Image (cartoon, rainbow, N blue to C red; front, side, top):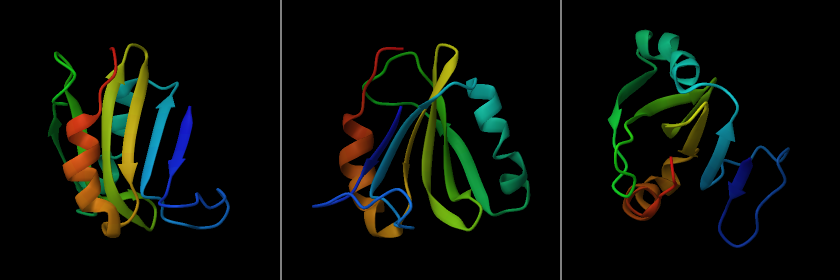
Length: 111
């Protein structure tokens, strides 16, 4: 699953647009997904902290702030979903406030 969100009209995936929200369910384990950010964290390009969703009890994930992809700044939350990983992220500081105040406090899923 790979969802793209943007106000008014969603630009194409090859547009180079920094989307207001991305949601993915990837077929990689949570530990493998978190490990992918180790070098960025060690180099100081991003930081990581534990994250527990308000509406999903018993699930603890990781929040990554800073470089979420090469040359791409943002906020990403990684959450375990059985043998997969849920990824919620925002790719532009223009949308950080909405992500913090509207998306994260209202997001839920059944683990």
